[in-house]
Image 1 (cartoon, helix red, strand yellow):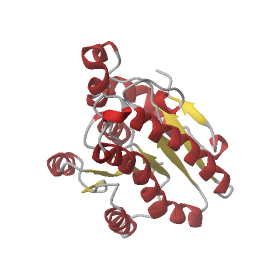
Image 2 (image 1 turned 30 degrees about the vertical axis):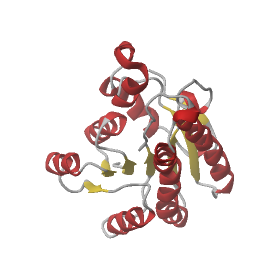
Image 3 (image 1 turned 90 degrees about the vertical axis):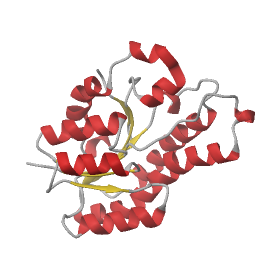
Image 4 (image 1 turned 180 degrees about the vertical axis):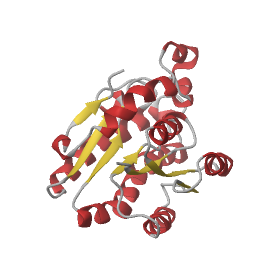
Length: 227
């Protein structure tokens, strides 16, 4: 049976690979991203019942409006996947501007809270659903020069644990470390060394079935995609 899946950050990297993989597996995607051009391409490639919209998850009014549009054509999602994220250009914390720090925390942390606020009440009313918040290896360990990113992903681990304790029976919140994948974000941090890791498309072959298997039994767990 087709699942209805809300997925953020669909225009590139892991989000785009998940979009392709989940649709190929027979599921319906309600996706968002910030690139109008990429969203238009997705709309052309994947027409209804799929739905794609330009949304900045850091802006609560945009997320609220997006959710309202989705609820006009669908019930509460089976899966809410918070994938959208950004990373700072590598630098010591004291050299990172307030604007950069704010952008990373706004997208990676406040963006997740915005989608939870907009979609989870309907999932609770329905009595089922899984919330997947993308964490990182840097949400469970640290490296120099990416302190803002590490801070947000450690926060996602804590936020997800607390959310899991708040959810009623039948729902689950999971912090998911996708692993080290060769995306534009990784290239920002690893440079040419990123090529040593799997591509997003290669990763999605393991990630799609992994995410689809998640149930209420995994509530509160911190998991890692095996590939």
